View 1: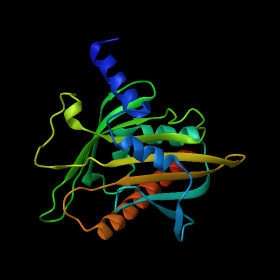
View 2 (view 1 turned 90 degrees about the horizontal axis):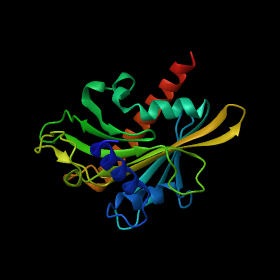
View 3 (view 1 turned 120 degrees about the horizontal axis):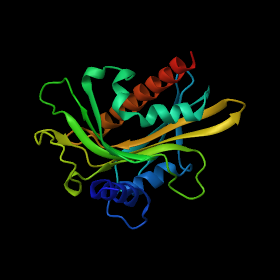
View 4 (view 1 turned 30 degrees about the horizontal axis):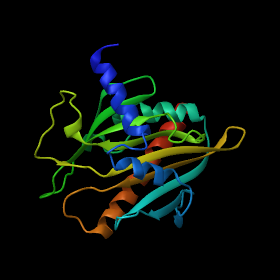
Length: 227
């Protein structure tokens, strides 16, 4: 094992699973993983439940979407972990750049840039770690989860544009619950602060719209792979 791979391995697993890490986004992951305190806000026309949860120390809420479907969780996990190919199924791929910069068997570190086609508003970008391993030993429903990373603590020799607004606060978790033969409830919970000077009410709207768009894109890709 090369030194680079070993260091990456230590970074990913240290960030994701140590109780005493510096990265505050780990606390977000644990909050998102907790099934309590979610408040149902809406039920969409296509039977997607939309819930929210207050986050300690933040004026913003976490958002969760979930739906009952017929699918194989392994197929869903493969879709979610294939970060390099997100552009093949996400809406408006021209506004989205994604690249894996390092990986191990169950985990990866990736870079993403969100191109914002609005005057006077910067693009957003971030590094994140993503893994299929559980957060808690007893976790049995997790497909994968991710959290944002501090770019100053990681050197992947990946050059980013310093003029872009870098996102620091964010985490997400995908879960499935078995409901019967081939039937599951799939959910995605997210907390993301988009940075910059945007009113909180608008951030909540943006996060809900973004999570719904991605959730629907993943559902469409799941259905495509059934064919």
